[in-house]
Image (tube, rainbow, N blue to C red; front, side, top):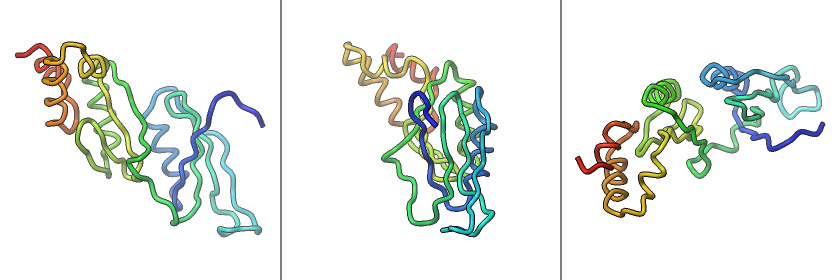
Length: 159
């Protein structure tokens, strides 16, 4: 099979199908695909879910039940750019269910996958050539878990 672009493979320990359903339920433009099962060749018991193809927010993924030997770390994260505070709130609430919020818009979901929930315009504010604006906004961001767009805009404006 050939495809355009990349497919991200996420390694789970027995929760691949559950995770695929979870992600598809959160993002628009998402769907489940094929489910592959282990056979007598192993390494897991025959009939168990080996891999699940899915699309989340238009991005192709494979959830693989590979076993306990590898875990997710913050070294890899997925960025979700949000148009408004309602989107920030939606993704933050859904992805922290059973997971945990972190600093500066980062979080880990219940499977240990790291996400960055980023409001539209934040990157421009923290990289503004006016260093006073950029520093104020960056300091405000560092003080937050879930990002608050109104507070970030106030910091940017110097209010």
